[in-house]
Length: 437
Image (cartoon, rainbow, N blue to C red):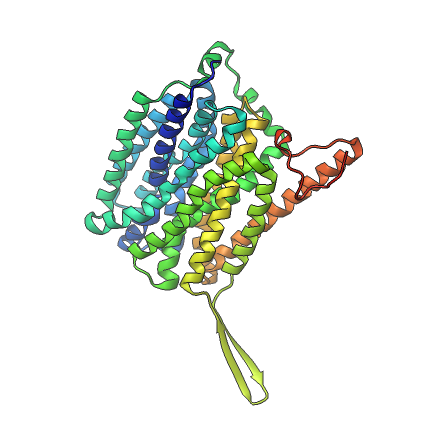
């Protein structure tokens, strides 16, 4: 395999990142047009949550076989054909007139979400291991596509309606699909891929027997699945809780999605520099604190005092809410990069398969959580119930991670060895015993 030049690496990374940004914008389109559709059809919160979540389901499940196809055929053609297919589905969505038809159309729109694992496998093939974390962090910043939708789609929606908005998205994605096929090059692993014997499906799935893969999947269920869920749910939440207009709610939601996407680049660099384990600790500790504060609903208190009742209220103002959401998005972005830093290191020949499964589980979080948010709203009548659920997930992931690390350390002590999650990036100064030989 020849070593790619700097310009070849930048070309591959730039094209795949821009393509993924557009795909992510399409993938989250129902966060905006879904609100207008719900008004037109009189949908409940549960029905709206299902409509928002349906594309996430397709995008999650498709990552498994798209990752395998990318390992086998390379990212250039898989990525390009995927964008062209998705654009056709988005355009056909505009002919739907009933709720069941919209759900079927949303399944096709969801193919855009599968672009993530295609881009991960394609971009990782161009970079040496020491720079893969940073490269994949830059690629993953394509999550900012949700901010493109939250910021731009409301203006298209107000001016032209949801059907024209979807048609604009379909046209842009189709153009990018053609551009990618024409300008992208075959990745450096393509020659070796063509020379080797095709591996069976079971051989490609062999690493999934490792429990570590499923632990990574739980991490990603929160840091990515919850990110997608909030990107979809926040405009509706802000309208319901703070009475904002759809354009204002979309712009505030962008304050969450933009840093939650762009800081993924920083997360990739930090994972290369300090180690992915440390970054994951920071992510989950901060997320537990933020989701705990966000989960507290407005409450009125009455204290029966000596001279009569004393009344006071506790509630979260909009500026405080935005600050907490910004903080949560920042640490989730670090965690997204840290999770995918592990995969090319542990499973260099199975990036597509392992990354596809991890991405699928994470994407399923983006499907399950919006639907659950809507159901919790209908059942409990408490808007903050969505953050209560996220608090439980973050706390569970932190507990499992810490238990796994401590268990591994006990094995190391017994064998008189020293390892980290990523041996070539050992950074034992924090959350790790010192002075051990």
